[in-house]
Length: 306
Image (tube, rainbow, N blue to C red):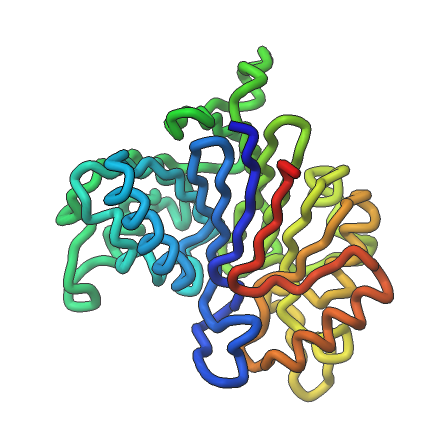
């Protein structure tokens, strides 16, 4: 029951990039898996969620235990939801999915999921899935609590409920950030047994650092931060400037990690135009600035229970 494991299932931004030049880093889009106790927590449902679904099915058929999972969406751009349609556990009647995500343009999570799974764009509608789906909207002032034994969840508004929850529960804090077009993005901080992991994808840096994120990520054991571009020179290139796109350079990620006193930085949401060699170069350059840095790759496992 002391297991606290993170596995990267998809680490790309924008769109999938299969091929011989991305074999090491991987070509699937955003998805990070947490196994904490018996609980399964998933952040984002890019194409990386497809392989996770296959593994969960194998476990289900091997043990006979029903699948219970929490899925947290940072936002609803395609590279963060395009794998949900192909997440096989969602088709099982015995599966329970606790789904959380933002409201966007006054549309809630259920309406947005229904939209992306609507004919003629999808062969299957959301309401056709056999699983039990408990869908909740987030605005950035909530705390999600997950039972590490059963995987069941409930959530509360942190401003209205001051009493600390059971210390054995997994605590997931939510923060809204506006540095990604058009309606912002949600960050997540997962805490359990004095360990903290922060997920901050799809955000662009500010002069002096993102102060809200620095506070949110204070003393994180693992800080997963957007670093889509190669270095500042690519981000600010006069001919192909990426300013305003809602993504960061590695130097921006390092600045926030240093000010937050994070123990480990994971560069995430790699640009699809960057092959394995380019990302390995980026990793080495960043390690000169922040030695305990790794570029995320598919299959990377970080075990915080060791």
